[in-house]
Image (cartoon, rainbow, N blue to C red):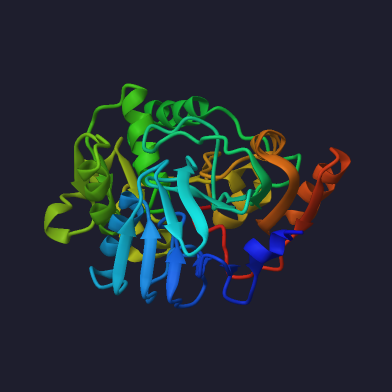
Length: 339
């Protein structure tokens, strides 16, 4: 009798596929890695061989340099590649550009590892795809019933309403450099905002990469180099996007009386917004909320649910009440990086 652990099991390095001879999103350098997406807690440099989508490989090269691995294997969505005894394919995860769920099939057993994902529409990446599996391995970043994210368009409308209300103030939006920043820019464009958007230098390379992959961001201007900054007053009524870490630096003080905004699913927790000194919390997440998580488990997990990281216990209990076997995995090292 085939046991699920014969195909995939947890180790200190991460999820190990013995019959395929590879790790999925390993936390330390490995001989062979299957990487679900480009965020640094899942995509690390130093592996000998890396298999990922073309977009994820491009992101890794942009972040770590062209020699981030000894060899790389690009896999398009839906393409099946034999690794050892296992058929491996990638399917859209809807998290960021190039993000994928990894589907493993071996001796009739199918296990799919979600990586990070979301179900709602995102103009910057391919929409999430349901992958029916005997065992579904899911994240649970927002795995509590309290987390139900509002509509994206309403959050962007809040930002634009504040811009109209305070035309004399710059609007400084904190957003993670990979995925969240580009999504906000696209949502602003869709909402009819076509003025130049100013970006911190840490976003420039990844925004260019998104453009290279067909994601149109409109006019972006540099908000970092001193010789291109102009006067403080030039930023009145403008939107500036930067990584949250930049808000505590002298860079943020160059803007006129800024309205400080932060885009994150965690902005639903008012105490977090207050702790960060956020004046305009924007509830925009690149992770599935509670309803998206439970819908995905219902549609994807035929027999069992494994949970990699997040609020594991609540989602596991919900699945058990739905009649599924469920268990959290003792994996460490994955963070809510984009949140």
